Each structure stands twice: as C-alpha cells, then as structure tokens.
Length: 189
Image 1 (tube, rainbow, N blue to C red):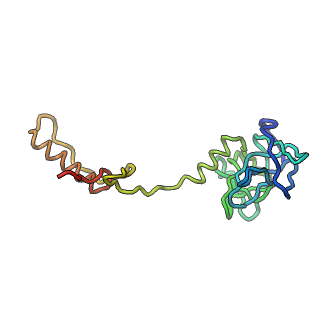
Image 2: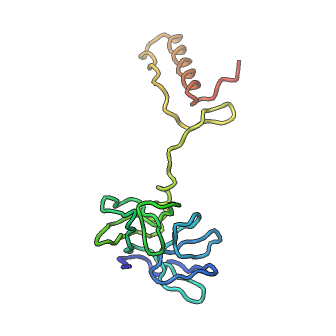
Image 3: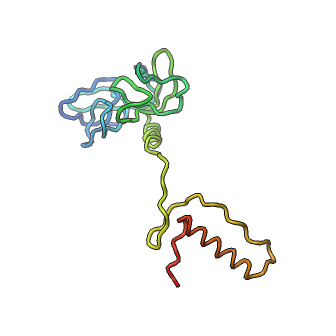
C-alpha cells in the first residue's frame, strides 16, 4: 500500500471486539459504529485507511492509496472515475457480492489500484452505488406522483385564438396529464 496524499489522521474509532486492524488496512464501520477491517460483508461502510491501531482504537486517514487489484474481477484503466468495491482489507475489485463501495478509482497501474478514499469520494461512491432508475407512481388525489415523461400534447393555438379554443385545449392537456398519472384525477364534479 502506498499513500499519495490525504489527511493524517482523519479520526479515531473504537475497534470492534475480536477484530484486528493493522496500518494500511481499509477500515469500515459495522452496524454498531465500530471499526473493522473492510470486507465484502453486508452492512459495512468504508471510512478510510488505518494509520495505526493501539489500545483498542484505530486512527483512520484518508487520501489516495494503492491497493491490490482483484484477479477475478480486476479493475482496468478504463475504470478510472468509477466505483471500486471491497474484496477484503487489502484488495479492491470491479464488483462484489455485497457491493461495498471502497472509493473512486484514480488509476490502475502495475497491478495496483490507486483509490480515492477521502470522505467525499467514499460518499460519492456510495451514492453511485445506490442511484438506481426510479419507477414513479401515478399521482392520486392524496399523493402526488413524481415527474414522469408524458406523451406529447398539441400546443395551444397561437396568441389571438378564441378563448373557448384555448380553454378546450387546456382541458385536453389536463386530461392527458391525468391519464399519464402526472396530475391527480379531478375529484370535483
């Protein structure tokens, strides 16, 4: 592991009972908020790299560090700017069983992955991991739906059109929006 830059130390954390953390390990927090060696284990959240550990505490730093590249799910230079996932405390991969984000890939060179494990990069990696396409529910009288793509509705006639024509077209637009689930149905007679 090689450090290129970063904050030294970022913070101190209590080490979880039964865990051993050594300098250079990727460190994660478990559900109890205690430090453990990073692993591809559901519920863990990477917080940085161990600077040193003693007396049941670990000082964690951030920055750009090099880690071993997984041989099965190796990262390449084409993955720069993408999320790297935890394989274990010393190794990162392009995917994983539990998809625990380790940070953002800065470079891949000589069998090493240079990874940004600063708090903003870890947060961005986690956000990228959880950002999925959303299926929007239709609007109802009690719950508004989110914005949906609707079919095109003809524009109102150009300025100067008769009032009834504009009113008719606006009502048609509202009806189309209700049908698409964008606007709640009219519950008034």
